Every structure is written in C-alpha cells, then in structure tokens.
Length: 246
Image 1 (cartoon, rainbow, N blue to C red):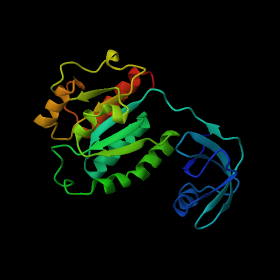
Image 2 (cartoon, rainbow, N blue to C red):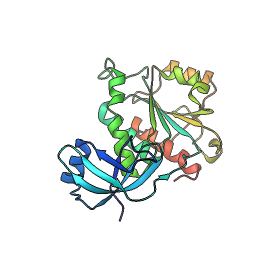
Image 3 (tube, rainbow, N blue to C red):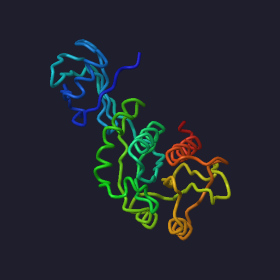
C-alpha cells in the first residue's frame, strides 16, 4: 500500500523527528483520518525522502519520528523546461499541475504580448507565489521528490535572447506556422531543452519574428488546434516520451 506523503522543507539527513504545521496536521487527521502509530512518507523537495511514524496529533501540529534511513534521490539528468504564458488562474493552475506530474524540471512563466485582459494588470509575482501550494500538491500526488522551480519572466524575449543565463541549450516552440511535427530526432539526451508555447490568442507577429531571428525550432503539435494549457502538456509529454522518461 502506498504511503501518504507530506512535504517538509526543514527535513534533512540529520532529522530524527519533524513537526507538521496546522494545515498539514488537519489534512492528516481530518481528511486522511490517520492516527498515532501510522506510517507516512516525508520529502523535502530536494530529493530526500524518509518514513516517519505518527507519535502525536495535536490541533496545531503533528509530531513525526523517523523510522528508517533517509534516501537521497539523484536528480534527473535530462533537463526539460516549459516556457509558458501566464493564463487565468484555473487554467494556469491546471497547466502547472500537469506539467509537474509529467516530469518538468523547471517552469518559466512569461507575460505574452497577447495577454488576457482580465489578468493584464495583475501583479505577476503574487500569481506565482500562489502557485507554491500547487507545486507541492502535485509533487505529493505524483511521487516526485524534487520541487520544480518556477521563474517569472517579463516577456518571451528575456529568455530567448539569453538562453545561457537560464541554462538552456536549445529551444523548441510549438505553433501552427511549424512545418513538421515534433519527433525523436528533435530531442537530444544530453541537452537542456526549453519548450515554448503561446497564449490562447497565439504568438504575436513580434514574438514569431523573435523566434525566427533566434533560430528557434518551430514545430506542430498534430492537426488540431489545442488550448494553451493543453499545448504545453502535450509538448512536454512528447519530449519526455522521446527521452524514455514516460
């Protein structure tokens, strides 16, 4: 039986015990109905996991004691980043959740030229800060032990013109102007790849010109028109599959 998972950034290889905060304690006792003596798994978002026994459940915290040697996972050497536009809250949350479940290493969120007017004037840093719970929840659910980093970009140009600063070797953009579908030859095992998708209204002429000027490979995602969040998920799924990671 798979153990219920909890996140604690304070968990290290030297931890003998941990305290879960009130939010996680409430979820543990009221939702999952776990009790003292039950075993849970804890991960720290940096690859470390361990099994803990519940020793005390209180209103504001739950006490856990380590019952086995912690295991340090080695991070995936195949780096795939998703470079996605900011969308409406529910769409953005769905997209980020699915990208993490599939195995994205890093997520870059940019403000597209054709940004939805309902979010055009919103503080992007606040939008991203609210994604932290989505990231943790997706890792808990999917069994991932590394929390993918989320980075906000002012625009698409910021990353495409300075890929070395963002540790990306090559870009692949998905757009209807592409001439071929993504295939196995486009994905290299030893390269860090940035997968770029546009908003619901598509890339602007300026953004397409930028992609062409920077020699970004532009590919199709089949014959159907996909929603913005679907395109990002499908693109990452194909890339991870070609890498043998799905």
